[in-house]
Length: 557
Image (tube, rainbow, N blue to C red):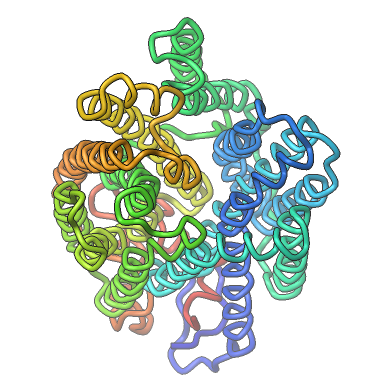
């Protein structure tokens, strides 16, 4: 239902003429630009990964190869909450455009790198911009679109993410083979230029003036804390033993920094991460579920291709296609859940159904052995994908619906951060369990020779596998099967914890384009007070009379 533009809290007059048709089209164009930006963010690592062997061959520095990924991941994780807060303080459009420009600058510089040290530094710049891309998209959608309508757009986002995961490795391999590895970075420029032009032209959001200064101390402490934890999960069990001095020092630095951060946030005038948002039960539960979902999802995406290559003989060059059953299922279910949420305004069923399917899918995947067919494993992956499809965007939707409009940025960045941290811990912990099981099984089945085979790494590439003698290769296949069994069983246990959290989620009504939300002035639904979240009534909560500038746009989406 179209409405005339109104001031915050003001009701539209019955029979007022519709003036928002052009703005409606603008919103749709903005959504297209946001989808392009998501594609930009998701494609980068997927495209760069296949180019890494060629990069090492050209630049050298094999011993620093892991830092090309680590520097990007550290900068992304550490900057995510800061981007969210900057958007809340100074306006989303300018901050979002700045993050795109920084990301593109990092891409150009990475493509021009002359040695591995330069590439690592420029990847950190690129990661700094990437931290604002996804947060900016989520926060802008939160400001433009009411919660009731958000589901269908978030379903579209999952589809874009799935396309990137499937097509990224194929595109990256093709670009590297035909244009050179530098174009794996330069390819970001046309996509980024399209996003910049579209957002600049059609996105119109009110400018904001910050009421206080940036909490620099809090930002520094949070950056140190997050960086320490990410390094622990990246280096633990690979570069250093889990009980080594370096890992213990990083854990101590991370814990002290985060505790200090919490203390500082309680006193800061403009905290980077306002602690009051965690007093809302739904928001806290979504943070927990998002962390656990990230833990399971990225762990599964790491070990499924490994299992299919080592045990089922699949080609490593088509690694994106190996995950097709899971990604397609995730995309279809996410699209359906978004449409269902938009049409009914209900969502609690999806966290519960999603965690049930996630646990079931992981339990089924844990049953795979050396005789499991690709068809059977594909079915198991589809079950897991369906669970992920129920959870991926609903967690963000509920998190945004649980805070005031002024905290939309920090809510979006916090949800993204918890999922990122979950993925880091998932890859590290599931990886440590997998490696331990593979090494012990190899020693049992192939004796001393088996131990030597996995001495450097429990994950062998295609060339290493092809050079193994038949008995040792068979032992390795059994070892990988045992390792994935342990990893997925752990994932299922983690999924049960997410299921318990899902049962405590409260069905807070989503405001938006439902019939009650369109009633003329004088109805209860238009009063603003009736639209506050029931689990923690807060003035200005998303969807109430104080939600402000979004009202003029949201009604026409």
